[in-house]
Length: 214
Length: 336
Image 1 (cartoon, rainbow over the protein chains, first blue to last red):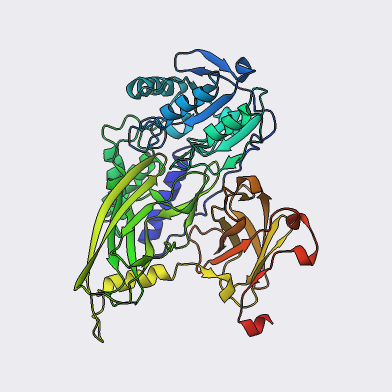
Image 2 (tube, rainbow over the protein chains, first blue to last red):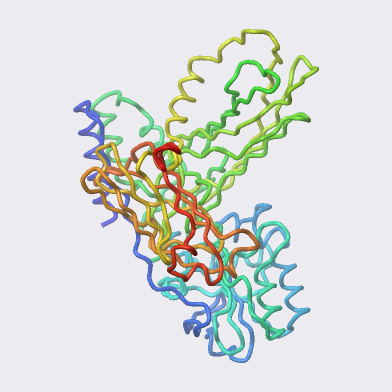
């Protein structure tokens, strides 16, 4: 299936060149977006294995605030080893420290839905993530979303795309990790939840590399 | 499963950049390699040496004038040339991505305006992204002070960009532009190639809806309505939203509008969340982009709209008094 489309495109391109005519390419299709998790509603349940094969379910963490960070090992904002990577430039470590000061029970999980994007099996992706986890010192479990169903259920669009779930399993914030300057929206959301207040903002447009669904 | 190597990508890219193939053998080779590389082939984890973002995007910068004259505005043009199939982003990257950063350092007294962004393309994904493949020229308006007591001025430009195909990479580069200062009556022209580039990309800048007769944008409840005449062979219009915190147009993006009897009508459902405005005023903004079904290329010019959104009860009210003022095109006399 992968071959047919490019071959057809190449044939059309070749025909266009030979004929000396302008090539008119097909219009880009726009992917339909599955209904995503909603603020104020229960966060979608999940069960995923981490890079060590250990299974994690959202239900396991009932009574605790859960932070999900969508992750990709090759994304320069997320898993890469450049200065913009939040795992390489200290931003996640600083967040973890600050979260701990607010609530020592906060659970921080990474979710990798890159099987389609990287064209890798779940096992190969887990190996790659395990290597990077060790190389740049990621402390949180990296959960492998093998068929990208969890990404679809949450509406995760980029790496990093953050989700904050309260102790009752209700989604309270999703979107950007930070304003890429001083403000970390995840920390703000967790502080508000702990204080029993209203989370504001509940959504800030995410940035980073795209998530590709299967 | 394809495991395309960087070398193969380079080979395919080189072939794709040829305006004419050298021979039928070249054609067949190109066809074969193109098929094998699967057009959207990734830089896979197995690549021996993945390219850097700087390898994938060539950049250059030049001024729209050959000499700076006191008080006379000009533009710094920044040209990005992407390797085939790679793209950089518009000011609103969309569902994912990141707009390029242009950091222009100017001498004291010079004033920089907001970057001018030509109409972008759409890249499908979990939510559409907006950006540029092939080539784009971004323009930075610069206004010199009214008095300049130097013979030459220099501008340092730091560029940083995210370039994506299936995976994304960072690139960065510095440029230095030096210009003489002229107070004389005549300034020599810039090169013809630079002039052509400026004309080409200025024509791709959006037009404000205020400049278009019988066109207008308004809010109806939680919907943005834009309508007006259209003078092209377009048969559909798409709405490319700006990044407006607290105001989210419906997804999947872009929302499409219809064209009938020479007029377009766009109806965009909005989600208004004042708590997510990040302290700024609520507004909706974006481009109405004419398109022809079946063609990937956009039609120009696109139409820029921007409307403030009142907060609180005024938003949900249906009385005329509480409605935000519509934006209309045409001259003041025509508007009356």
